[in-house]
Image (cartoon, rainbow, N blue to C red; front, side):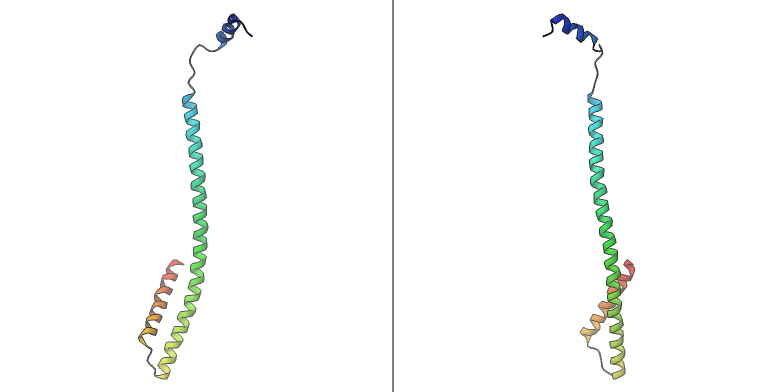
Length: 109
């Protein structure tokens, strides 16, 4: 064990001025918080970008399908006209919906 004089000699070697470490600790804590929040935001952004890519692919696929439905509805209208048959209102409503959805899908492209 060191004597009080030896301990005092050791303490005398320490700087006399007070060193404040709180600011550095706070800065380090803030930087760690920033990095953590950034990583979370980056992850969310990457997930959203992936979903957006998937959604665009789905819009493209739906447009192809809706264009097929539109082509079939146009053929049905043409065939009905050729045969002199009136298309029921319910069926015409479906054709109208096909056209509306096709326009929306084309706008998403």
